[in-house]
Image (cartoon, rainbow, N blue to C red):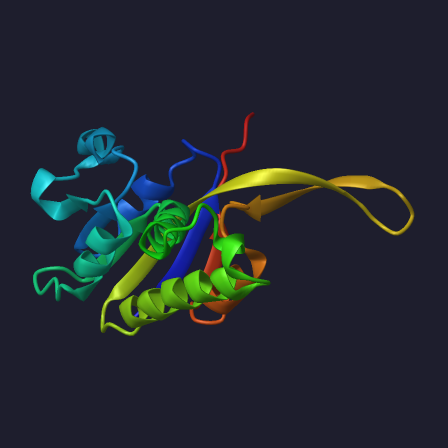
Length: 175
């Protein structure tokens, strides 16, 4: 089964691409699934979630009538994970409980739940937004790098990248 991450700027076609996967079921956060109807999406083939708890519950379903599970958008779910941890711990920010501890707890919980999803005998497509970042090489020459959403920590992205077969940037080329 194919496990992949798709990232790119909003509107480039990540969700439309995922819709073409074998028998997809979408777990969505951004309310944009309705726009996929013109590409053949059906209302029954998605679940809109509004919290990390709802997302975790959705991950546990077996989706027997489907071959692909699409998570759209991954970074929203991570921010909900952080938010719900802060709320349950009665703190304002993950940094409030000591050096690195809150960050570690939320990253680990998120990674464990995503790993369980990736372990399913299904194709899995994780969708993220992307952005551009200007960096200088050692000679001081600026270049543009295309990166996944900075809303997910690099360490977490590295762990997820190690669990998927493909980590792909999606883009449109203007001509």
